Length: 442
Image (cartoon, rainbow, N blue to C red; front, side, top):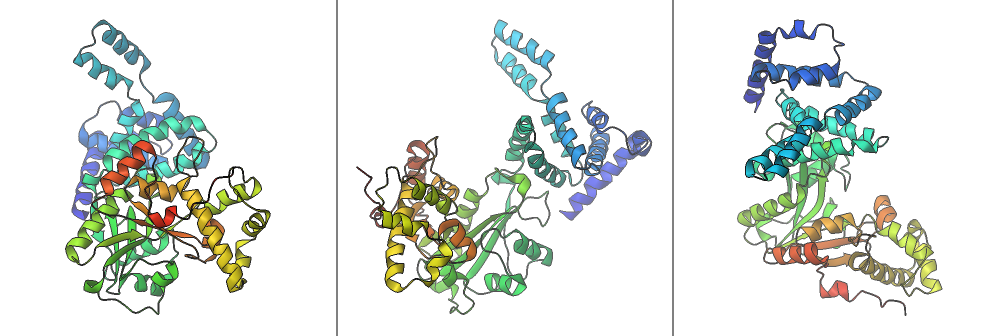
């Protein structure tokens, strides 16, 4: 990969020489819109690569208002060529042939898509474009018209980062330090408390970590999953992360637990890798350890507390007594000191409400509310078990009153479960979870 990067840099340098690039740029304040137009003008490959580098260098020098203006320029000036599009529409109406359809397709494509393709030719162009989309998210907060620009980024990134280009690598304690540092930084579910904590998650025989990489983003993980090899399905994150647990030999494990999945590149938000990652890791682990027969997650329920607050304020169809509403309104941090009887009553109630949330709660458009549930159910998992008290950290209490969930990936049922969810919005769940459902209010 380093050799390829050096080669691309040399080609770009040669391109600068071919077009007298330093002289071509003139002063460093040459308008970036002119550079973009020149890049689209159809220069040769080497000089085009140098021009692409010039645009990216100019973009990286822009301040926040300058980047806002750059994205507005892409939206306003680099959309479809309307004259060409109009002629293509007229030609199609006269003769709806395959050639006319192809010409119409090409004419309808925004010019900025081709601009982004050519920018991607620059050395490190892919990395810069991912960072550019991060800046675009910020710009969209004040200008929703930029959604059209983001649509083009998503379209191209969906092709550039498809599964065929991704490389699965195991991350262990012997991996390069710069990669390990990024695992610490990017962990988004269960914060890694420094190097000793990271070592506990990577080095023992019953721990695994895998990440997807892209050839153009050297040593930059796109997404990674942490896996615990266990003898049973865990009920809490505490038992998984405990430094005092007894280490299990890998061949003795029967269960692989995906307990943390973290996306690493904000600029790739909305580009799905996780479904491929889980399935690939499950297949690789099964080959390595034939004794594994259970693949589950230990997942957060990030929207539960917010949803529950709304139900407590307005129970609607839910038959909640005043005592139950008062109990559910209790601040989660106060529940840690409850006596055993009060805790048991609250845990039963939370389990029932979590089942309602995961099985029946829907958005206005009819989608399952919880984003983690949508991800796993959409990938063909089954809602296996609700674990009250699964995460008693401050974050776990704040987001879900401590509730965690096991989703089970049964390799024989994945396709059937996926179809049920994708076509009928059906949540496939175990009988144990369904038994927790409360009857609707009369």
